[in-house]
Image (cartoon, rainbow, N blue to C red; front, side):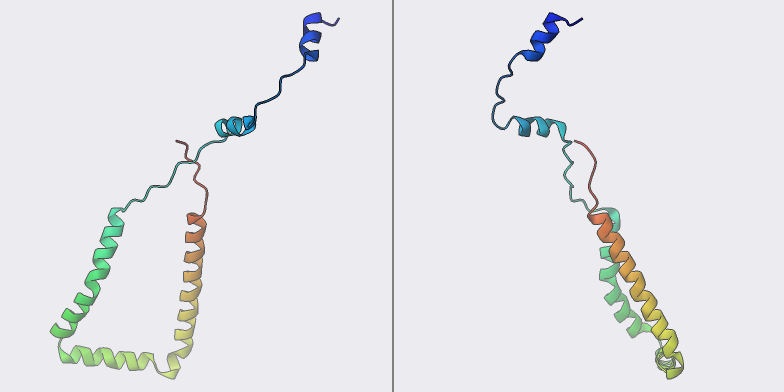
Length: 119
C-alpha cells in the first residue's frame, strides 16, 4: 500500500541549492581545532637560568680551585684521549648520536601531531 502523501513528497521537485551551500554546512559539521597558544612554563625559565649560570660557574671554579686539582683534571683528560680509550669514546659518541636522533624524531612527531581539542 503506497501512501499518496509519501509518493507526493518523493516526486516533488527539489529547489536548487544556493551557491556555497556545502561549504557552510561542512564548516558547521567539521570540528574546529583549538589554536595553540604560546606559553612559557617554569621549566623554560629554570633551564634558561641554569644554562646562563654555567659560564659563570666555570670561571668561578677555575679561579677558586687549587692548581693541583686542575693538573689532576688535565692528566685525566690526557688519559681519556689515549689510544686505549678510543673504542670507548667512539662507542659513546655513536650512542649519543643515536639518542639525539631519537629525541629529535620524537620531538618532531610530538610537534606535528594534530591537536584534537575543540573550542
